Length: 94
Image (cartoon, rainbow, N blue to C red; front, side):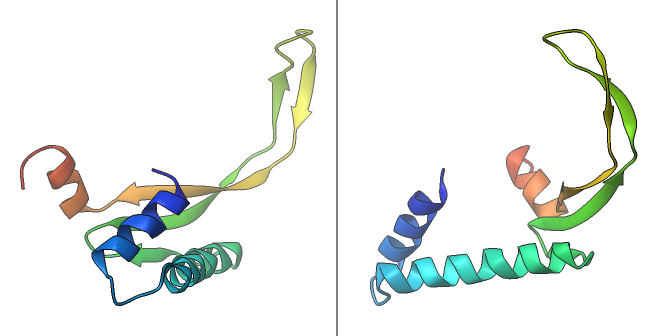
């Protein structure tokens, strides 16, 4: 599912809302999550999961095309850990 499909499903489930309003709400939620992660904060949605960032250390990689070694700098990457309720639903325990 892509974002536009999510917006469409939410709009269909809530006929009292305009699709453009639903799109604005979804974008606002996602923007807030990204902003919090950019500040190094953790975003927890109970039952769904938690978004956080992890630091990846610098390392030596390899260019797959040429085989030459390449220095890869350290970077911050997003991380998502599923919540207990989601894991149970996905595994059929709920």
